[in-house]
Image 1 (cartoon, rainbow, N blue to C red):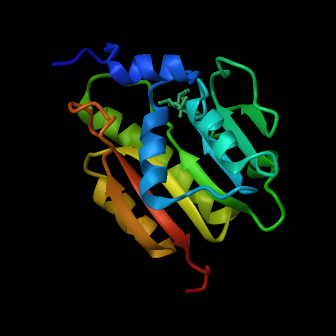
Image 2 (tube, rainbow, N blue to C red):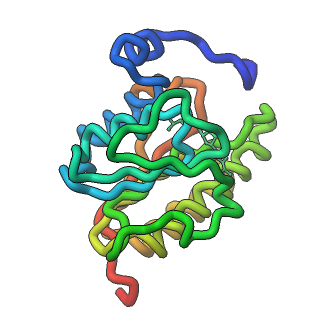
Length: 201
Ligand SMILES: C[S@@+](CC[C@H](N)C(=O)[O-])C[C@H]1O[C@@H](n2cnc3c(N)ncnc32)[C@H](O)[C@@H]1O
């Protein structure tokens, strides 16, 4: 069994270091983007669970200087905030949604790579992960524009089918995806939801 705190330094870890990203998790977002073409230049992106900052950096490069990325996390970023980004140090459960400063018309993309501090007790970890993913979904329901995309990490557990069903109500295309760069023993899966429906649909 893998110890909850143990982080094996695999080739993704060293590749991230070489390429200037603070964490190996960047390759998960890269794989998702390669498959689903999430980002367009000029997009406004909300990145929940942004620290240490790999997804924030990748997204800020993908949307370019006309785009804007807003990151939120309990912990600070490990490096500087990119020029087209802002960072809010906050808990998603208590952050006022208006504090996100949503752009007029809403964000184009809402990402959540949020993960709870793991305990090693699978059911507890999965329940906490569901609560984070569900909160991200609520934020996206309110602040993602029609036609926008939502990506959220969740640990598979008893609430996973409910989460998938909730997401399917609001998006036209929904896929559960386990990137190659996710460790084999990990329970995490990414729900990729494309093309948000009109709220009355
Ligand atoms: C796997 S890391 C994210 C890695 C990040 N996407 C990157 O590429 O650098 C998960 C993050 O979720 C954050 N997180 C967990 N619970 C949170 C909460 N309630 N509010 C905001 N962030 C939270 C953690 O602090 C942690 O930094």
